[in-house]
Length: 115
Length: 111
Image (cartoon, rainbow over all chains, first blue to last red; front, side, top):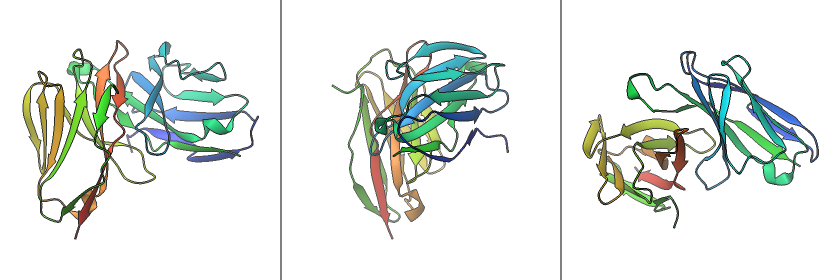
C-alpha cells in the first residue's frame, strides 16, 4: 500500500489532555499538509511542510497546536490541553510538484472526540 | 463572500442520469482546481483536477473550468447509486499550495 496513512484512526480524550497524531505520506512526496474538518464543512488548512521545514501555518493553528516533520518523512500533530471545540476529523495529505502536479492525496484521517 | 462556494444540496438524480455539480471561487489568482468525493465518515478522495480553461474528461466524469467566470463544474454521466456522496470543490491558493474547499454538495443517486 503506497497511500497516505494516519494513526490512530479514532481518539477519544478528556478535556485538558494532550493528544498526538501521526501521518505517513506517500513515500516520494515532499509536501505534507494537515487539515481539520468539522461536520458539514470542507476541510480547513492548518499547516504545511516541505521536506522537514514547516513553511506555513494557518491562523486556525493556535498555540496549543504543534506539528513536526523531523526527517522529512512522517509528521506528527500534537494538541495540548484539548478543548471540546477541538473535536473534528484531522486529515493529512501529501503531494509532489514533480512535473507541475499539485494534486494532494488524503489519508483516512484521525477522528478526535474531546469529552 | 466565501472563497469557494457550492450549493449544499441535497441534489437528487435518478440512476443513469447526468449529475451536474457547480462551484464558484472568488480569487482570480487561483490556478488549480480539484473535485474530491467524500463518503460519509471517510476522507476526501481525489476524482478530478483541471488546470486549464475548458473541459477535461475521465471516464464518466467531466470537469469544466471557466476562469473568466470563476466557475468550475463537475458532470457525472450515467450516475450510479455508488456515486451518492458529498462532492467537494477545492482550489489552490497561496505559496504553500494549500487547498481551499467549499462546503460540499451532497449528491444522492436514486435507484
